[in-house]
Image (cartoon, rainbow, N blue to C red; front, side, top):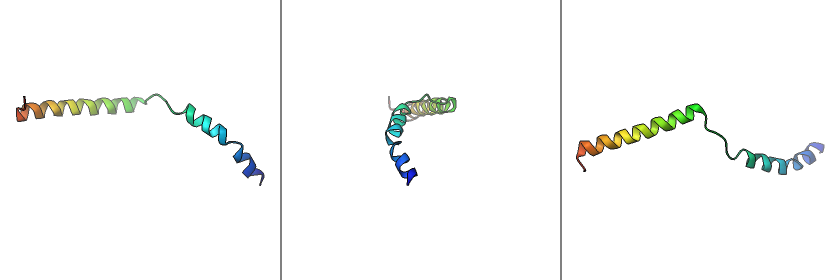
Length: 55
């Protein structure tokens, strides 16, 4: 029963921790993946525009 009461007291701390961890920097691999995805998307857009002569 002592464990249940100690867990109840930690609820406000958990909420504060979640708010503190709401924002964090991207990892280097995540930055690379974002860069590769954007590059591939722009490259494919150019290929399709030129390939289908939409302009």
